[in-house]
Image 1 (tube, rainbow, N blue to C red):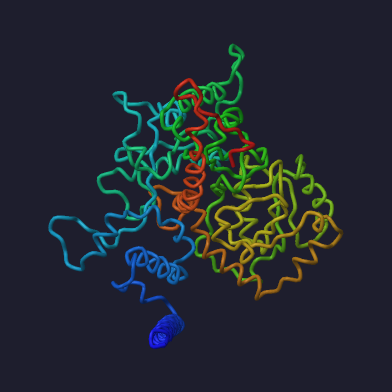
Image 2 (image 1 turned 180 degrees about the vertical axis):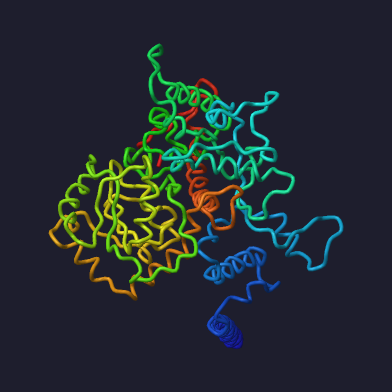
Length: 501
């Protein structure tokens, strides 16, 4: 009996201890839940008593980074990979100067560009520049090679970008530097191909009667052979290369073989979408032909012409609308719609006409874009864009609706629609857009040396915004690199346009 009572007492005691343990555990869990809710953010993750505290600290750091992400401007947030990390770490580790390390806390992000040392026949040799003692590049400190004027100048983008990279190597480079040249491709964010493709087309596309191919096509053939033989191209398949083909007809043959590269173009009018598209490539402005309107003190009343257009009227493809609009607008008393060209004093007349006009028409021609848009911006003449397929420079960071009027082609060809729309825009709205044009005009200025916020540096910034996407696609393409290697060592699967982007 005594043994039975003792056994019962032991069972009761065990149950009591179990209940006590369960209650204690419950209170412990509830206290943690209360702590989680009261802290809001998991500041306790660094507590040394926690298991895996180092891992939790990393998580906490990631959360902190997410919380502060909204404080970073979108235009530079996706360029974090371009920051010199050594400088950043040195500047943040100590507020005291370090005699052993040069640290510039004011250093800005820069785009590191590897530029091929192509023979002069691909670049400045096309400008009749003669190499001295076998050098590849001109000495910019003695003389900068001249680029021919006229219509050739509007597609001179590769010339200005090449000059800018060469200038970054001068003993005393200009202070405003966004892109710098590096000589090790492994250090570069992008690999630049300095082929003056637009100039090659403009000057050498005619076939010599004694040859089967034009000099322009021969240069393209030689460029493809040169590039595809380089180890840098073979390593990436050309994905991290940058090629300028601003004239719609430039690089006409080579583009089909060099398509993995990022192109700098004026538009996509003569490109199939698997060769060039807005995701992969960059739209750059034309260099305007007329001079910038300096000291513009215009008013709504001082510009007597309501709507201005002067240029080729009969065009093909999307430019058919020019002819339609000519017949709709030619009799409007305050509208100037006439044929014009750059010949004789054409530029002077266009300058005077745009400076005296409130609105300037930018209508699609043989391709969606036209230099006329950038002439209008330089004239502070509010652009009226009638081009359904147009792509605009820097539109990922610039709102064109603040200083341009967009009209669908289907609406523009309706009787009285366009002229009534333009007449409905009053003094206050026009003045607001006129002022905005003066604020953005520098974004379209090509010059040497480049300056902060001009067209040269804006293009480099557009390139920088592409770099993260280029790297991501390049890294993804290497996921199954081992499984795609054939029995013959080094032979890998060649990408095609349909599966590349």
